[in-house]
Length: 134
Length: 186
Image 1 (cartoon, each protein chain N blue to C red):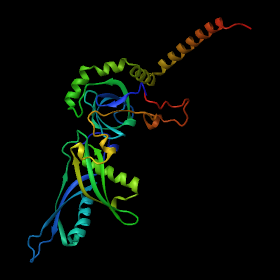
Image 2: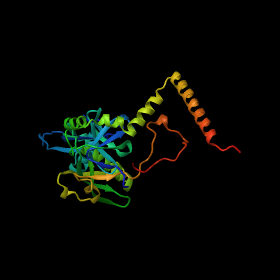
Image 3: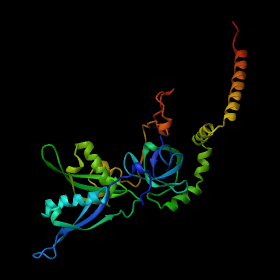
């Protein structure tokens, strides 16, 4: 609870389900305990109701007012460089890596397998050195 | 135009239906009755109009005509409003009146939610529910229900304490997963 992220006006959220999946949006207002009114003019999310089950709260909060105009939301979003901050954050990087992994070509997957084999054999060698021989 | 995921949008629309008895020699200019009807399309709106007009004004479909059917489009769906809806519905043992409040960006959304809510909480089917009146509550002091009032707050702030882990789309669902889900919020 101490580190919980709060649903609040201005909270940046990542849409993880539905047609807007993969986009960032800002919580503009709360409809009820299950839905928020979100807007993401800079990221292509139209102002709409979004259930909380479809969004993941990020660590970023913007100084957006309740029911702020979309154009002003875009200005604040862009001036805070949210997309850049998101892409360099842990969660953003994780998503980028998952996407990259999903889009690997067969040759790249082969290279990945070879690299993993090398890594595990190097680890095993070092582990053997450290292990006491009976 | 209402934007968003079509599966989340309410299908109900609001119509203004006006109708009257056929003009006759004794009554060349009959009174025109007007109603606001919530229905999924015009045809249902007209049908519901006749249902009420028969009961209230003693005009049968066969003796009257619809003068106009116009859709009442929500002016602004960009912000959330609180609606108070008065209804009358049939229970298993009689008829009751109710006043219920809903928060939504549009009146049609709130009314649609009311039908779903009544079905879930009171097993009341849509046919048995008559909407007496709807009001948009613009002042927080007018909101009667504490459940709705707690969201009528410009400084609203709460954590999501329990997150349900879900695959991003149906095709990526799997029956068995290697680890237990993490349901706590970050």
